[in-house]
Each structure stands twice: as C-alpha cells, then as structure tokens.
Image (tube, rainbow, N blue to C red; front, side):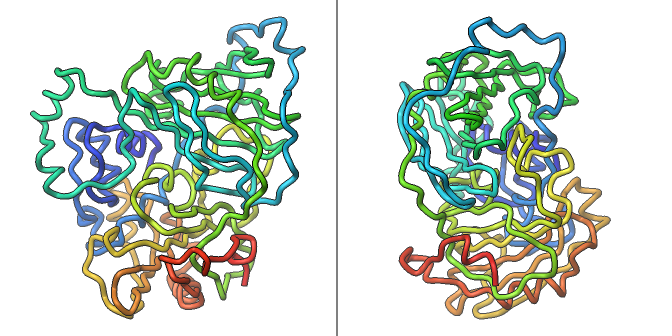
Length: 413
C-alpha cells in the first residue's frame, strides 16, 4: 500500500462513508468517484475496516538533500529559536495544544510516538476529508454533483497535519530539495513534494512541507496536501510559527491496557480518540476511541524527516491495537465473541493491499470492537500470537475518559 492511495482517499471531494481496504485502493484508481466498498476484493469479507488503514506501506518524504537545491539565505544560519521554554517530557506525552494562525487552525494533538506528536490542521478555505458520512449523504454526492460543486467554486480539498518532533529527532538536511529560509527569526526549511508523496512521481505544487526550529535542536513540520496548488502558500504555513507554544506536559491516554506482549515488541505510537499514526490523522473525526502500534526492533529516534508511517518500507514487523465503535466495521457485530482471521496473502498482494492477519474482540453489547492486526503481509507474527495479545487486553469504559490509562503505563504488561 502506497502513501499516494491514502493521500487520494483523504483529499477527495467526498468524505469517506466507511474506511475499508478498498477505501484506500479505490481512491487512487477511481479518483473521480470515491465510493466506500467492503474488503471483498482481498478475499477476506468481514474485516474490520481499519485493518488496512493502519497497515499501508508509505514511501519516505526524502532522505537526501539535493545539492542543486536553492542556496540558503545568509541570515538563515545565524537565526536562533526564541520564545517560551519547552519542558522536558517523556515519550507519549502531549506538550502543545491547538491554535489559530489566520485561516489555518491547528487542532489539539491526537497522535504521539517515541519521537513526535501530530495534530490535524484545518483551513477556512478548504474541505478536510477526515470524517465519515452517511450512505444517503454519499449517494447525494455523485460524480455529477461533485463536478457541479467544482464548477460553482466549491472549496478545494486539504489534508494537512503538524508534527512536533522531540529535540534531536528531526533532520532538516534530509528534506529533499529543501530550501533554507528564516521565518519569524527561526531557522526553517521548505520543500514542494511529489504527487501522492511518492518520491518516484513528479513534483506537485499543491504538496508542501514547511519545517522550523521551535526550540534548540527541536523542529516542527507541517505537511500540506491541497488540490489547490496556490493554497495554503508557504507564507500561510509560515504563519504557524509564532502560534506554537508549550503547554504543561499531559500524558496521552488510551482506552485499554495490555496484558501480554510477544518478546521484543515495543510501543511506537499511539492515538487518543483516534487510530495511531497517520491513519488516525486521516480519520481524525471518525469517532474512534484509541489505539497503538508496536514494532520490533525499536525504531530510530533521530534522523527523521517524516512520521514513522512514512518511512520507506513502512513498519514491516509490528502490530496495531485499535479500539473502535462497531460502526467502523463492515461486518455485523458478534456480541461478546473473539474471532481471528487469517488473510489470504496472495489475494491481498494481488489487490495491492498491505494487510496482515487480525483478531476482533467484540463487547458484550456489540457496540465496541477491539482489533489486533499485523502490520503487513509477512509471517513474522502468527495469528496465534495476535490472539494472545487480543485476549490479554482490558478495555476501559470508552465513554468515560477518567477510566483510561496513560500510554506509558497502558502499553506495557
């Protein structure tokens, strides 16, 4: 699964009705009509829809600096980060909150990891495709309706997110074709990204990355994927610099606790009221409860130019935990049951899906589902281990956040 499929899915004119494997695949193949289908094409009908949303393979945003890139302005090297002092905080902690910058609106962060936090960014001038819609709403927005909306001057689509890296985690020199600039007295770098954020594709002026040093050796980066090449502009994105301020460190909460982990697997990232990683940002307003991603061996915490999901090759040896409303599933609830599924690898590969085996645990009333899913098509983690992980998890009251647990505690037995 390539990042461009996810990008297409979250920047289409039509918000997603459901989030399935086909949601991502069909988005790239049928850009003019993004209907939400089931997982039948992969030969595993009945999958919880997020089994793939968190299991795609994403290319890196750029690992080498282009020596032919624009030269840095003389003032850039002398600039220094200024402003409030950022407190030292442990991984899986939120250290900033949402703020406004002109027509852009940074939301409170919902994703944490061992190296960063991520928040959605919305725009008054754009439509963000990160929440479900009803079947009736989707039917009303057919291709012709979408064309009329564009002709009438409807808002362009935007998928944008702010990643605030821990000190030493981000490497600005790794941004391919990055241009060094100084904004509000801070060192910064900006770059235009390729179509679908796939480095094999040509550059798309609507895809932008703007990063700045918000504290000594600590960087924040906003990624903006817009159907309008002109907006947001780099000037718009640069307006986010002054608004980023520290807040009292707050542990990320998750609505579960693990009881069993296979040897060597370590927590990598979380989602609070969202799925973990970029999947959570892509579906930020879907009403999901929380999740986490585990990986083996530990991921690097320095030299990053993008979130872990966007590293070339993806997360090859790991698994996800999702706690979701049953409405996020494309199968009927099985009240109080645990059921594991072995995904036919060949069929999944033929469909272009990076899906692994998974287990579902349904609540007694069928309104909540816990899913544990492998991150890819490899056989590194057998489904029997996924089942042990799933059966060892205790799910909190999803409607009462006071029963949730700080991730640093919840993610270890």
